[in-house]
Length: 177
Ligand SMILES: Nc1ncnc2c1ncn2[C@@H]1O[C@H](COP(=O)(O)OP(=O)(O)OP(=O)(O)O)[C@@H](O)[C@H]1O
Ligand SMILES: [Mg+2]
Image 1: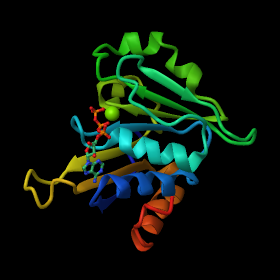
Image 2: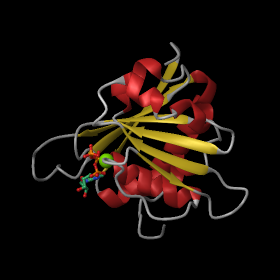
Image 3: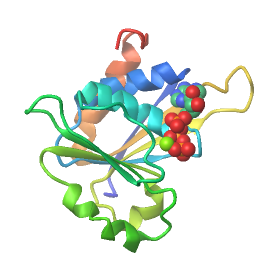
């Protein structure tokens, strides 16, 4: 990651809110963006991607690519972006990741999301965007809360931080997405 990173954290209180956050972020993404999703098992990475996919208006609902490693969703409209959704949890080895053809996925008409991307961080582009999801506590009253932290390289920070701020400022009802 570039040394100059801008950080912004918001809190979601339900899976629906995390999906709504993803939906809100979708329009701030550009072709060629690579987004690393970090967080423990069940933190909400796939949940966020499902909202992003809705916002990007791609085909087919999102499911976890844990076994297949890569799901590609084509845009519904010809001017939309492809969404490549990877889960590298089972891939400990960065070489295996590169052999999957990761760099061929980075194109002007696609965005790449990588769950467990920390495991291959060393071979990711310098301007990778990280979104970190953290369960705040095991306490029953808070176990649906997640801190969602954007770590954006300065070259991409303006548009992405704005989207986080817009989501934070707006009503969070996810039922309307
Ligand atoms: N605020 C929240 N945001 C997202 N998910 C939440 C939230 N609160 C509770 N959950 C629950 O946490 C789980 C998140 O599952 P999800 O598959 O998105 O996690 P993941 O990070 O992709 O896990 P894995 O590492 O296994 O791929 C779901 O069961 C969801 O209902
Ligand atoms: Mg997942």
